[in-house]
Length: 509
Image (cartoon, rainbow, N blue to C red):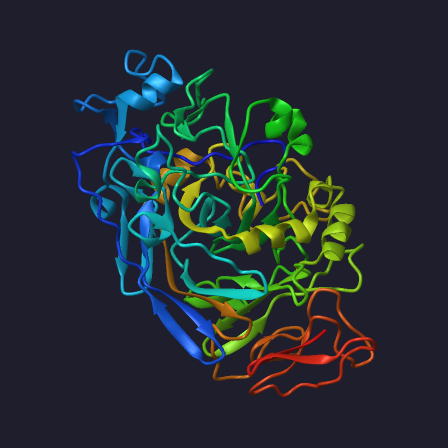
């Protein structure tokens, strides 16, 4: 969930993206094997990660002269978008030495500050020249995360973006996915230096609070599924939808949803978030809490679409061998209490919090499901927030809001904790570790040794109190009703039948 009324930008290294290919530094993608799973087991995928082009060294094609320094373009090399694309080259990266990005086995470590570099963003690769396409409709996605050393004001994010799989190769983009190009998200960011192979230099303005970032007249928009935005104090998962498919360039305030036109753009910037703290359970996730962020745990996200249309996004956790159901809502106006995302939940949440409902206007879960069906790219990042201090994730937001009003409290952090100067100096050694990435049929990507815990009953392969709740002891539609090691009831509500999806997971459909 990004801040209301502002555009969040990432804090970038001073030398950034390009579209031609340089030869000064060899590009070697760090290996990061993942797994695809079915009821029969999991198979290893020999994937890797690539650094986003916006962090890379941008220099003249025939020399080492920077095309972009600080937050300013070289006007000789870059007098216009096309000439700049022809004159400037994007080079390879020293992943560990410059950016603090390392892999070991199936684990990826992203350090927050490494030398002069702040933050990073990488994408999962299928091979040397293509991103890994993830088609997760009626699938689940799981990963392990260790954010015990990730404090207030920081975000260790794992999410999906409907980017072009080849990175947007064109006649002016020779770099492509191999060099991390083609980024887009639901915020329609203006800080991308190159969009569809052309430099975003028209009306470029350096950021007032970030000496390494700025914005141009163009934004780059697409559907985004935030599977995990978190630090050790708070976490959220959030679908954001757009009215268009794939990467779309916006070129006006209204189309981009900038400023006062935030709710009129082609993408839903607020999304429909589920943040346990914001939803009324302040004891669920954090150091020493039900999901204890002092140690590693597994995050499982299920995209339920039994008839081909996304109807629910369910969440559960596994820690110390036990399933932990997602927390239940405890907010006036959301009744019955639920523990996942449906269109009904999203509409009730927007009404309870007094928020605009661009999510519904732009298609809701059905639109998110269509993007998941087409295929999306996995992005992993660590960053701080020069626009809103990450208060929308882990603190009071807006910072002068009435904390007695529903939805204002997002986490326990103070309203001064996210100041970038403070965070970058005091939290510079922070990091996040993502590992054990898997995707496949629902119920296939994780195993447990103990019984579930949480406020609702559960089986070993999925939540038994899904969005929408239930009554009378009957299992609601879309809830688990059977599977291997299942110990709960197999009786579904009237009008639905317990249907086997795989040996590990049956569902009321």
